[in-house]
Amino acid sequence: SINEPMAFLSSCLTWLVDRPAPPRRSIASHYVELTKAVAQQMTDLVLSNDGMYEDSCIVMAAAPKNEHNDASSSTSALPLQTTNDKTHNLTTVALGTDDSVALSSKGHVSGDVSSLKRRSIVLQPIRSILLLSSTVLLLPIRLVRLAFTVLGRKQHAILPGDVSKDDHSLFQQIQTNCEKSSWNKTNNILLLTDSPIADLSTALILLVTNNYRAQSVNGRNALRNPFRVELASLNDTRWGKDVATRQSDSSLLPLSSTVGDSQATSLSINFESLFEAFGRICHTELGALTLYTMLLSSPIFAESVAARSDLDLVIIPLLRSLYFSSVMKHDKLLQKKGAGGQKTPFQLLSQTDKPYRSQSQLYVILILLLIFSQDPSFGRDSFRRVSIPAVQWYKERQIKAISLGSMILVVLLRVITFNLNMLHDEFILSNCIAVLLNLSPHIVQLHKYVATRITFVTISCFKRYLVLLAENGGIPEEEGDLSSPLGMHGEACRTFLQLIKHSVRPRCVEDNLHLVYALLVEQRDIQKICQHASMKQGDLAPIIDLIQRANNIIEQHGTGRSAAEAMQTLKLHSSELKSDTGDNRGRTSSADSVTSEATDLGNLTFTYEEEADP
Image (cartoon, rainbow, N blue to C red; front, side, top):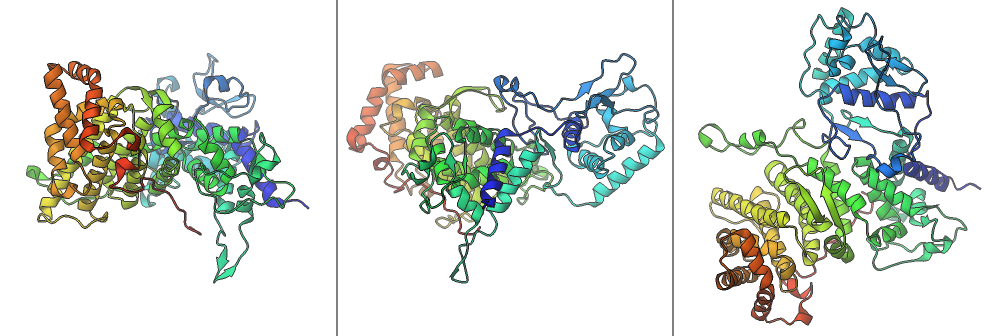
């Protein structure tokens, strides 16, 4: 008999990996091209240097392939084209047919078409778009509605002389309906995809694997989800059939159950291709959820991912999504102060002001980072072995030659700052803290920009904490309380201090001299923070001692008149700095390990545990 769950998952995973393009002359091919045309010509948004949009309203289902992969893809969707016919100066779109269809037709636009702006060519001829989608009548109406509600944040002026009366009436009707309807970012997004069937298969995998998961009902044993049973025995086609019985202690997740070999055959796929496919789609909510499901459902796949040395292929897209989901506009920050500089009560961001589609997407990304960080080898490799030549999407500074671990730190610092100022979400803060503390024992060769950011964010967070503490009458928060802004800022400050402490311990101080110099620059504020009563839960004396010894080294061996001279002096005498710190702590090099350096925190590893039936 046919194993239907296995056959279903095999087809879905194959589509997810291959991402087949829709057949030419099909409705799906028309949808692919029409959405691209709307994104390019009905919005003011442009593609960034990495070939993707920076706004959450336009979601690319898959990241663009590398140049060496583009040449091999002969079935990719055709881009928006402009006809070369000199007699028609009209913008056209390829619909998977042999001919290009003009989006502007005679009689629908008054005046010379060539004189219209590029955006207006598609914006105005509504009747032409309806003709293009005559087989699916509601498709273009929804696209135009999206252009008004989501994509066209700035209302486009529609002049009566630019369009016909019928088209103008249709515009007004659509706009009126948009104003009456409620805002829903689940529906009000424009999905740009090259393979609708791959996106559908991803959604189906989530649907069948995350429903009916309870193994007991009213205390009685119940049937397990057959799709998750198949994923639990998922094999790599490159390893052979006996791989299903393998187990490893280095897996990302503890194996909740042993994989049986009662079945003669089991579900299998090329793990290399599957991992590369996740690297292209994990920036989307569907992709991140599917990766999360695979890591928790398939122990063998999780083990193979943990053994990889190129996890940046999936980590960087996740960090990119977090980065653009934590944008803070200055006008929103200034709204916290009223006339005369007086403070106004904290107000959460409205749904339309949030720079992300849903908060649940942020949760999934942070959970994935927590799952990766709980493996000790990930922390070591991310700082020592994985280097990123350049980060094109980071706007605040041009970053080159940065380790993956440093990139994770700088993005998480940004997310924490955004959360403290805009969201006050306890779950986001607790997961960010867990990831930071998991990585803290392995921080070496810290990028100089990241070292500066750690120091600056720590000081800024502490100053805000003092303000909140004064507003609370000087009464500190309860231990472990993350339900109030005071408690969240206090916990964030303590986490940053522990992060600094573990980064400058004797074993790592020579590799993190940029952080030592950043502490020297801000030594007055740092010493004040370490000596504050609310921050003394952990032993912060090593930080103060390190600052004093670094000051002595610069005074004895250098002028310290410039940053370059101070850094050079620290590099030349870093061994003295290390030995002084080690002697002061009374520890030998053999005992200088991760656990011995973090006795105040106990076990540094924070792990993720999924609910039995979430």
